[in-house]
Length: 433
Image (tube, rainbow, N blue to C red; front, side, top):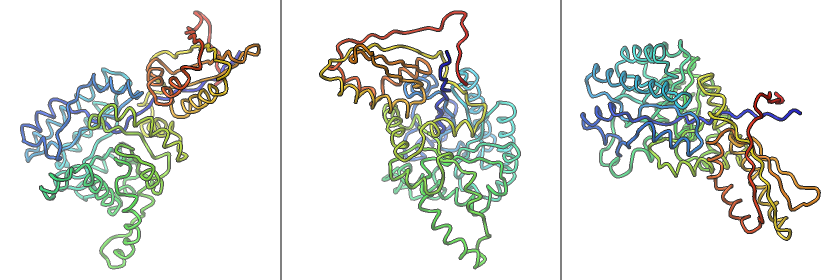
């Protein structure tokens, strides 16, 4: 007998940071730990993996946080970036399938940045590079960066952008209102528009650039940019650029606050196949991220966006074979045998239908929830449950929709028996491909 096979793709976090000890010590030694207006959080690799397991994330892409480790000494900055990239490469190798990393580059020294990009991509196996929106006044789009962009273009590089403190900012203002609340969004938009104004992504068409924080202010800024461009070109202030051709190379992560309004706005400038999940770990509390991830899946589905695309498929298309196809571990197959109080059968069915539909729609690790009813006794319910692995199951039973089902049906269920199974030894498993 053939059985239906549903491929379980890993869930990928495109926006996370490794705050390594070497990086943190260098930042503190230069008195820059509060450069971004808030403390740099603590981090260690085991705690990061524990969070990923709790949140149902298979693979996280590590990048260096802000601030950029440059304080006037180019050699020291290059050494810090080299050490950071080598540590990330070690994490990737040690925890197979759990981490990718985008290398830190010692900008504003362009020559050193090219050397580090070459070493990280060719020797360390970096999966891309991380670029700050500006490195002490050197903004993305600056013609001084063209030689770096040309090299990254030749390497078909994925670039993850991250906002940094603007080169000129009112110190009191950022003390009163954190940079992350509004200036980071403006900073990202400023850098992307500068790249478009200089036609960077058309001139270097093999680059793929991930814009953080739900597109920042771009949904609002792009229409204004489009309307001003012909006026500026006519006056000889700007050169003509193909805005849409530049935008085609942009992807957007959902780190931050992807509310319904934010998603609506983002979908005015891109399509679902260019939207990616991002947590911003460890800068956001773990439980907030775990709870928010499930809510985000629901919200995406409400907007007609397949959560599987956002949490998985789009990242796989971006990074290719670097992303593992399946979650690690063996598949869990079990049969739940449930007897329901006869007077509450209809109510139970409503709960079961809701949890089944929601789980298989928003949780890639829930492969099958197939419900059956005994012909002789309708109050006897059987549910075939198939999960990608133990982590997927543990993640499932922590979701709000499962807890709602469990609590709501507690008084309806007379008995519950869970029958765990294992594949027959020596038997081939036939599956429809």
